Image (tube, rainbow, N blue to C red):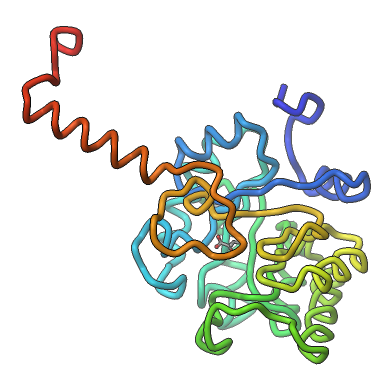
Length: 271
Ligand code: KIV
């Protein structure tokens, strides 16, 4: 039995029902077994193994260098940890853009090799054929509109999207196209709150917002951001629920001091 009580396993029909019932959907990113296990026990609905892996874990300055092998390697332990949460594998840059065949093959690898319950990819009209083919192969697919980090160089930086009428209209059209192509939900990233709410209300499938206001059907944050693991840059849309960076540093400094002073290990920690 989950912390929430009723539901044991989150599936596409459960998140669809949540939207219909007006229950908000919670999603977080995770990249390893122990973090995903804590999240799953806490009752998070969906776990995204995001290609934010590139920045959060691998030390890159964008998501572009992340490979299929990186993503599968980190999705496997998350899938092993998740007993209740639905696990979504994020398709990395160039794993679905080259051809529909490659997109389907790579989406299938997340399910067959990494135990994911669905995949996510970025874009609207331009990926509609791939979305159709992936979903008609029986693979649940989450879309991603607004700020799509794999296109950061085309977008000219990490900026709010859909601020003028033309781009807002295009985003609305793209959302409809993804829904019609079979997506079971859509991430809206860095989108003005009124536009995100309008899109959410016009779709039957749930939207998951990040920097897109409270009108979305659910929310997602990058776990390293919300746990306060980075000291430096914090995007406006991130709320830090902990200051792990400070706690980790203090613990490590204490450990170093005790090793130097011969206080650790003491008899309690020795055989
Ligand atoms: O890669 C990621 O973590 C994401 C979320 C920010 C939605 O795509």
